[in-house]
Length: 274
Length: 167
View 1 (cartoon, rainbow over the protein chains, first blue to last red):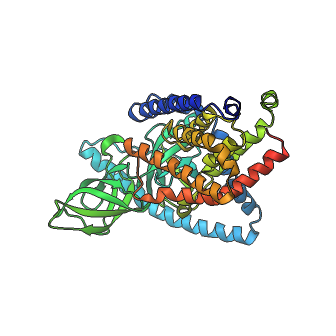
View 2 (cartoon, chains in turn brown, yellow):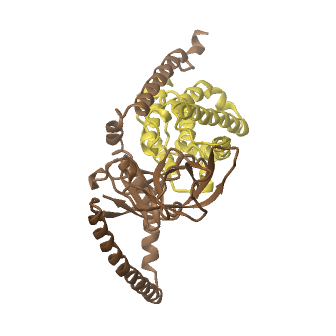
View 3 (cartoon, rainbow over the protein chains, first blue to last red):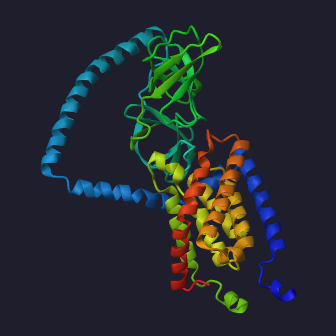
């Protein structure tokens, strides 16, 4: 017996070691979940994973460069023409918007409301998505050295995308607006009714509008914009469109589903609002 | 034999480290949305392999440190992956002699159980910390895919271990 024992790794010591590690993990998880004690630890530890984020981003960046390199002159000319056309159309619309913005400003001044400030936005790129399919988070290529802060809103060309939840030196994690743990204060663009929309489990393209009574003035197709309440998101960014309303007389509230306007599964180019 | 192992304890450590680096890359490599559920638990597979192959060198603390690294990498609850990887390493270390004797099918089914436990424990922890957002049992699918890719991982890492003489 004593001879064969040396063939085994001492298993009682292993058991105590496992117990100790489990306890350490539990304390760490408790501290991380309940209190924000460990955000500094995570921040410094994330220096070690920066190269891996960089490497995982590399194939896309390289394929992009190679594709750019082999683009033919005709394609570029065609693209250029299309972009010019688009720019012209948008400038035409901007003229009207400039006029409306000025008018809005004057009216706000008449009402003694605070002035609407133009937000500064910075372009960022999506690096990767959360490997956990049940958590709707993405990684963007700007971090604390670029001045990213906790809770910063992220947009794409079509609407609100999410907010920054965890910051690393060179990258940061963004929670999407359809994450079940995320809620966005909104108002209906048509009549100004305020509400809160929350993400749902499972679908990336569905949110629900909480606590809307059966007789609330809401219609399918209503556009929802951020209300600016809660002081997290600036007012006026598009959030989603109401796609379905179920008014069940037996239920206290109507079930209202909302589709996000942002291209949550397609956009790689995003905007960070400062 | 034990003497020679302790003498050459740092031998080939870079092969082990490189395998963990590749595993962590595979862990965050972007996949299409529908494929995310099927992503094998690469890090846990690598931990199981090195626990079987080098039980005298690869221990629970190494597994826990790797898990901490995975937590930072994935942005998950700090300590979660440390907990589950230490647990997987503990079970693999206590089974390593049997696992070495097993046929590939038996090994793969043991890996299925280990990864299933890995997933289940993280599921419980996330539920307790109210971070769990999984609506169904899809989180167990990766245990199946991990068992399917296990022979590949096993033969590849064994080939590397033998050609670089990691003992």
